[in-house]
Structure formats: structure tokens, C-alpha cells
Amino acid sequence: MKYQTRAALAALLVPALLVTGCAKKSGGTTAQSGAPAATKGQPDVNGDGKVVIGIMSPGDTHDHGYYESFVDEANTFAQQNSWKVITVDKINPSEAVNQARNLCRQHVDLIAIGASELKDALTAAPEPVCQGVNWYISAGVGVVQTPYFAQSKDFVNESLYAAGYAAGLILKQNGGTKAGYITGPELDFSKQAAKAYTVGLKAVVPSASVITTYTGDFNDSAKAKEAATAQLAKGVKVLYPYLGGATDAVTALANAANVPVLTPGTDRCTDPTAKYAISVIFSPGAYFAASLQDFKAGTLKMGQARVFHLGKDAYPTVKICQPQGDQQQQLNQVMQDIGSGKINVDAIIGAAK
Image 1 (cartoon, rainbow, N blue to C red):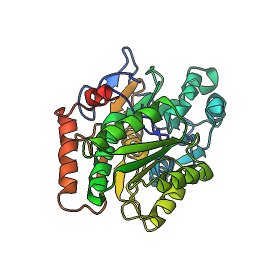
Image 2 (cartoon, helix red, strand yellow; image 1 turned 60 degrees about the vertical axis):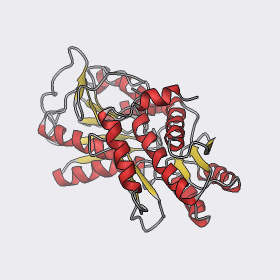
Image 3 (cartoon, rainbow, N blue to C red; image 1 turned 45 degrees about the horizontal axis):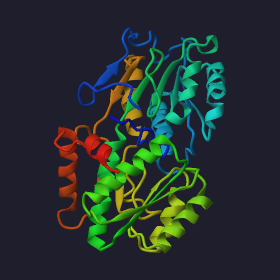
Image 4 (tube, rainbow, N blue to C red; image 1 turned 90 degrees about the horizontal axis):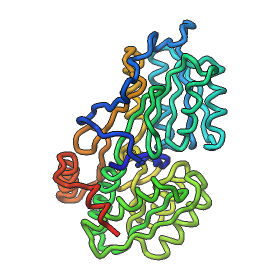
């Protein structure tokens, strides 16, 4: 299985995203042998009379999408429970360990990492400065489970294949033959996501071509707009900005050209600020919510992964905002078939050139 990071997505996330374990069942967990049970004292792990969550994000937590969903969920939950949240975003991966140590020095009870680009921060967990801190990561590529942290996972092949299938339905509807896909750095997870998306789209329109552009940055709007302008000039009839903070800049150009757009992680079908044709929903906030509930109850177990499957769990999922005819029914059936194993997306994508 290919796990998803969502730095866009990681990305992405996942998407996302390679193997750290196999899920036993939908919504279940996989544990490292000998992993400890829930840390004594959750949620006030350090016993100082208050609960503080430190958020680490590689992206802009005001991006109206993937990264923002993570911190929004934490803020909402904290407000309801009189907790405090410290957010550090736009973290360069090379600074992940130092930023984690800084949060530990602020006596946080839980460090929550929003995407696997910052996985190196986990190496600080055994250090004396971080003694007594719990850890959580919205995981993906290269995150190897240890007893020091909990994680949530989904599967890039599942959600991105379904996203591509939905885009194929839209492309078939408007008579197009070209689709656009814009993402950030050319990393393993972003390349995997692009491949899964392409295979899903071609399952509906076999003759279609997908133009993929790597801008090198999930948040640089200028680079993303340049890529979108070039793709629109080549005649793409559906466009997927698998991006972070640059998403809305691309969407505005596509909206002006009347080209349908997909979201990278959140449900924005009714968003008044931008028009989306398809919501691809795999936001880390949705997964983090379940872990925060466990943390409050004192049952968030370090050393375990909680996994989420398309077609089995409520999230991830894909929604066509204004479906025509039976488009959503067709998409729902594909997602159900992925969840049941009738469609083996790993095998299909792995066999694709």
C-alpha cells in the first residue's frame, strides 16, 4: 500500500505516501511490537495543570485548505476544552528538529505534525528536552513507526485514483481530451499522486492526456499561476491544483477560463470565494479530530497508527459539487469497489506506465 502524505500534500497529503504497516481493518490501528499504551496523564501529560498542543506545519495554515484544516481542528477542540494551541507554520524541513525542541521547551503536552515533510522532527522525541511530550503526525512517505508517536494514515492511490475518476467524468461531460495537474516539488509522494490521478482519469477517458507540472513549491502563487496559464493555453479542460497556499491563485485563473477545478483536501463545494467542480476530501483535520478525542480521553496510544480507507470510512472521499445525471452514483460505486477490494488500485496503478 502506498501511504499518503499531504503537503499538498502531502500532499500532500497525501495523498500520500512508503509502507509502515498494513491495516487490520477499516478505521483500525497497527502497532509496533512492544509499543506502550496511552501515556499516563493525558491530556495534561506533564502535570503542570494546563493542556498545551504544539502544531508544526510545513505549509501556510491560512491556505483555506489542507494545512489550515489541521490547525483549525486543533483550535476548535482547544477552545471547547480550555486548552492552548501554539502554531508554527511554514517550517522548512531542515529546521524541523530545532522547531520541535523549541516547542518542547515551551512545555507542550502534545506535538502534532501536520505533514510527513517534517517527519525528522520525530527524532527529537527521545531527547531529554522532550521528555514527557506526546507526539502525533499526519503521516506519509518515510514515516517509520516507533513507540514515541501516534499517527494517522490514508492511502494516496485510493483517494487520488478516485479524484482522477471524478475528473474523467467531468472531462467526458465537457468533451475535453486534456487535463491539467499542478503540484509543488517533484517528491516521491507528489509523483505517486500524479500517477494515481492520471490512471483514474484514464479509466473514464482512455484517450485523454494529463499535463503535469511541478512548480517546486506548494505555496508559491506566482509559479503556480505561471504553470496554470501555460496549461490553460494548451487547452486543458479540467485542472487539479494539488497545492497548498497557491491553490486559490490557480483556481481563480481556471474559474476565469471556465475550466473545472478540484480541491486538494477539503470540501469547498459551497465556498463563496472560489468555484470548485470536485471536492477531494482527505484533510488531516478530519483525521486529527479523532485523535484529539482519544487524547482528551487519555487513550491516544503512542506507537500506533490509525488508518482510514476510501469506501470504508467517512473520510477520505470525493464529491462532485454539481453532478450531472448519475455521475456521483458512478463515482460512489468506484469508491465502494475500492473499499471492498473489488478494484485493486495498487495493482492497477503499479502496472501503469
